[in-house]
Length: 105
Image (cartoon, rainbow, N blue to C red):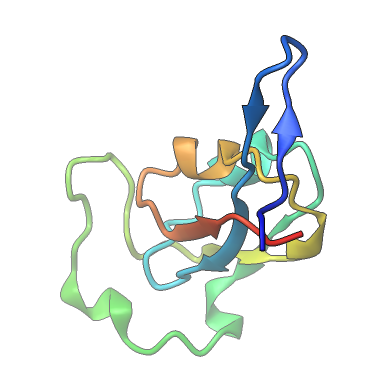
């Protein structure tokens, strides 16, 4: 079975990779993926409303990226079926907390 493919304006074929998962324990809630996504795939939610365990207990305030790992907001997948497979979100994510993969036709 082949994967979904697209064609650029220049006629080059490519394989889009769609968002599959978002690891909220890694997410710092910076909103970069939300801002760059051309579709309505993401939503910023209150971290306290989710059961993420005690991932913030390690006091990893700043691991060199300038963001606190103990933020009050976290990204969630609002409508992953609206993803067009551009991967703009993972390209701007400082924590690489998403996975993508091609989809079969």
